[in-house]
Length: 638
Image (cartoon, rainbow, N blue to C red; front, side, top):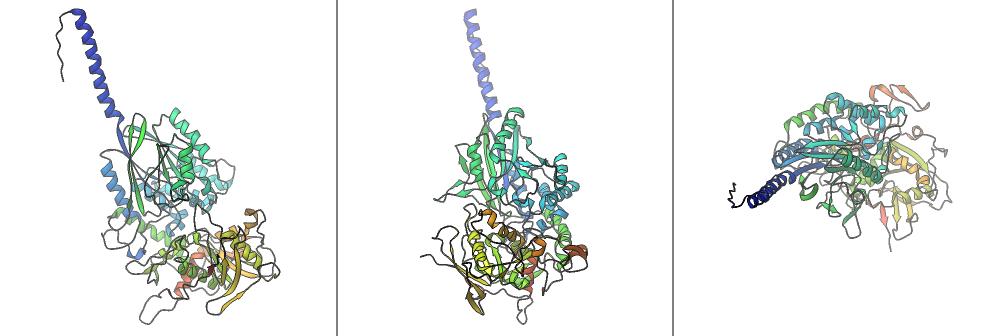
């Protein structure tokens, strides 16, 4: 617009002209600055992917290139397809970042083979992720294992940075050499700056306090998350001129007494460090119903688990301030068309997974094992609903070792079994039930079964400790058993909840045992190594309020994990160790050409293969009758 003015006096004309020029300049600047200041950016986010390369529910039903014909959820082909769609949509509005909040590995056979294939970071790179952080399960295979995983991914040329702001990798320990090398090459970073669409984003990554309890970090230490965040936010803001701070926080959220998500490490972080604009959270596997806004500023989001959802957060950025525009979870299901290139990469990785994980025990990743006629969930907060699966798992442990008791906890069964269209459960599905940990002497993945002997009082003490609930993970520690039935009363004081223990089974009945300490008879307990290590530390955790000593069959204290190893007995599958390397049990030294330890997942698969097959059928059907649904934990609250 042009403005022409004619004035009668020279001085008057000059003054008015100057005012008009100033006004027009101000208008012009405001128009320009509004265009520059008001920006839109989008964060597409996941957390706790747990190597969920293939959709579950069950995996045999998964058809990523067909729409509306299966009930599976998750899977990287469909996740990649949706990321591509959303990036194209939001890229027209402004910057788009794709971020993950940790626990990207472990949970499926692909995670079990991650030291060999490094598939998680490779696929995340190819799906367009910008960064992730460490979760506690990244360390399940130890510091050497995670170093190997990162190295394999880096050598492939496809990887993304792991932002580990509060991880301390400076110790002089040989187990850290691989991680230190990866940090030196820039694959592990304390923070990352990303400039996109004219906005400088500062990315930090933290492992929350509660998550460190579950981290087998070895020589890796973790500084306090809040103190670390305050320090790094200041660096990013003041020195590096970051305009938007995003924290990838593997900390978790918790509900309060009213069912509102106002607790947990992610919430505490947002409240304590106002310089953070967005917290992309993880660890608690929470599909938040809505975004949480702390102090009318910091936005906290979380997208569930196992690529079940893709979070979609839209924010505005104006005058140096961020503001929530919208947030939603997009289900990854059969309404999403998969990415063929990602699916092809996964098929290639299957070959290496079979070699690294299953061949030594006679299994393969797509092998069908059994049929279920209904869903067998592992719903932590619904003890009854998870009973059939829990009984199946613990029965498998007891059959594998012939111990008096097979024992586990809800949280160690990481997935339920879904019937879907066919009910067919493959090795992939069953492995997801028991994917945690590693062996003692066997380098293949999966927690080894270990056996120790305890008195009746010590059995009570184990149950007293395990049954104590953790508000951050409700129901995950509830004890599950085979060969044992116990009663409990939660109205009683802590560590005095167990009121009785009986040993036996459904077919032969149960007999009460002494739990007062008067009878020193020993009973054998088989459990995954992962839980066994917790059990042996109960006196330490409780400051000797609950006493116990893991013993061998002669009543002598066990001195090492090797002594507790259970060797294969009458298992159906082949059990030749990888590369022929196994343990000489008598000498507790490695030898060649012999059998090796029993894996947790292997015991379950062997058990399923030994179920009866009806005439004309090819696979056994998992029973769901009264025997299968037997209640072995009896609540007796008054």
